[in-house]
Figure: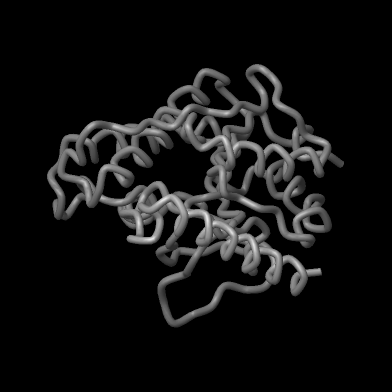
Length: 241
């Protein structure tokens, strides 16, 4: 079974200047037998605005715009499922073994939104192992599936966040993953599933959302930081084997 056989479209959100990340995610997809394919598997150009427009940072604003634009484009497919990946996503060894379960869930018509990867689940109750329904707030949006027909419900809320100010109780100019959690809070009928543990994690690399660390602003130190991240990533890969 191949991932491209069970989803309609895959969007990999990538800033054009982050060639390093594009190569890494391309390698990760290739290991799963997935190659770039027009209107199917797309390297989606991320947006870097000139200002933060009231968002926590320029990167956070660009992240929000990039996810929104990808989902708006996916809506043209009308039906099926869209997978959104950020370009630092890495597939765990468990992803392949869980693919049949994912396929079964997609075909069951019992889900609208599925988090295949996350950073943290907010609340006292931990999700069940495997794939399970959740109503808890979720930190992270680097790997998730959305039922394309459900975009007609999700997109108006996300688009509304652009016009509401930061701190608005309905959700305004905030981080994208926060907007998804608030949407789910206001729309409890959204059938949200989560993979526990994450089937898709994030690679250790310089963030394009958070402000750059001081050592990422100096060429020599930046290279040293990149090497350190690769070593850290390699250690995590060894542990996960």
